[in-house]
Image (cartoon, rainbow, N blue to C red; front, side):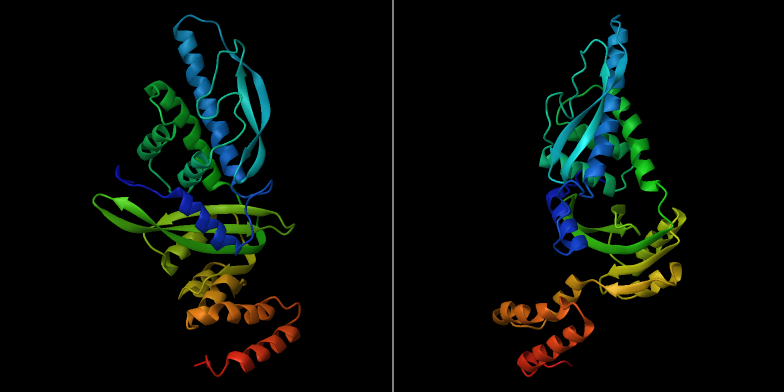
Length: 312
């Protein structure tokens, strides 16, 4: 990442939520972004405390760790328990999330999510974290924080996966990056897995210059290397070559086009003034409880709109 890059993390998260869940909220106690916040903040707080104890030692003060304490914090992605280490003297006051603060700002949340998804180099991570703190911190403190954060990030990215997932949502979102005097497009590949017992998990986030089946092949290979042996159903967009890329790594997987992308394709040739009533008639098709009912509703849709918008 160049020094002039300016990532729009607000749009980053909004697009992730829209694209991966087709309108279903990620927020709340079981929001998939909450573990990322917990993961980063606990590592950063450990780094801050390490630096504080080193500074205390340098001044001759007697101070050391004194166990941990948990506090309930709130964020846009939901509430979670944050474990923080204490010092015996009680002189440690963290910067990234002060002692009495229990609400994580949306700005900090967006930056943490971006940090995990963008695959930065060690040098850029250090620079990024320094900017995240929005104040001057000593080189020793910054070093202590990155010494904790970088291994934690790598642990998250490389963590073992379940051998089988019931559903895996694979989606890519594009966002603008300011580079030098111009603006370029980057792609973030998001993988959301649903385990056999129904638990949702953000499996991975990968950065590329653009979306393509070849890069998806590399992402799928990484998932297999991390322990995933099969996904029963893969929910994807209509990218050319995507089903073939999945079949190359997971040959038994059933590929299903995402409903949101199918709706977008259905509306592509519908006039703007007709989109709202057309959507009202289309909804009973994809929300039908049975195949037979869905087919009947599709016939009704064709009878009403078929002449105006004939199927090629």
